[in-house]
Length: 601
Image (cartoon, rainbow, N blue to C red; front, side, top):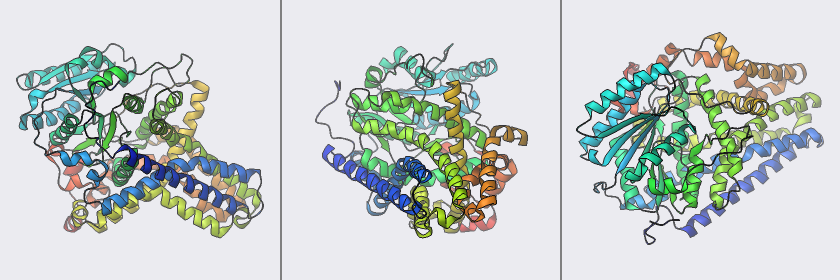
């Protein structure tokens, strides 16, 4: 283990002692917050006595807290670092200060593009943008491209053969490109990459892992490569991924919120996670020798209801790499690393439920020998992201029943304590977004890059309403999915539809009628018993209640184009598109923006 590491090399992140102190502080903050908030809820519910329903509500609330509090404290810590550190990235990754940016690339790097029933033309466009940049930097001979197909659709397979044959011919004299298709996609994406490792992995030092929707600049890739070359301890280096400008209303609203939340959240989490950071499975670079030797995924037991193959492979591979003695780090910087997000609510749900199934497989690894405690925590957190969803739905159902039985809001909960708890919960939900928002508004350059203060605030207000509706929709989707898994077992690993498209009303109703039913029942019960409680119940019931029209409206092209014209959900790349995105010509970059908004920017 750790055979090839030069032990006197500096670490990428903080020293072990500093990380230990940081983790202790973080755990203390989360535990103290959990104790305080559960105590506050218990006190608030004791207004009319404390019975069985009150105990159930406190227990459910406690289940929701770990994920929410971790996000809150990540956002707070991230904000403090962004505001008071001269270089926030260097503060959590001191090794970046040692790079000049012109170091000679000596490693052999494999670029892995995993595809399954994807548009080969789109994949080819994304790849060519990167290849042109690498050729322009004069380092193309150090890179080797492997397009790894698991496609089983005959028409798509034929298109792949034509497209990638032409691509190989076009770049024949400049960069090595190989294309292979497996007959069976055993092990899904992890099996696809493992097949590469067994065939060709020994010929290369690093592997840059890309998805079919990944876009990366040559500059961003070379920075990852140079950091890996500089530190033999570094096993996986994950870049911070942001969304490609989009015209879909759903995508614009979702990824504008993600853009705000991810920066402070990732900086804050990198502060305490350090050398045991996340790996998201794409837009990241791997050190191949230890990855091949130590990160092979085992098969789960045959009777596993979640399937035998590990689906969400990335975080397991990260903790396996860390167990082998190598660092796993995230570079928390928005710098030329992009992905395409789902265009509709239905596609977003499909992707999220795939992740839900994959993450729930992690329970079998929680007590695997040799994992660092922080690695086990990473796996547990990935599960808590979804386990908290049924708890939120339980709070709606049992809370509605408790209010109805109490006969009034005052008999159910102490008003002052209830209001305080509500304000704290809302602050927890939005802390990472608010942290980045405050940082952006306080910096003239970042403020102008995002379109100006008024446009940023208008976008934030719109996204906040959208997020308040979307979150409970996903909570119920996860809850229903858990029930389906318990009854039917594994549901497979379906592909994604990445192109913008309408959602007909019948399709939306077919997919989302349980959401509407839940919302109607909760509001109807309160309307008949304690109508004054309806506004509070809408924080959870509101999203499911309007899920069908939300899915339809946010998929309408005209709604998306209206948001583009108004500048709502605008990303900085729409104002000043980098070459890697301009070459791809995302449709959002070609919609005229209202003249008064151009003046603001």
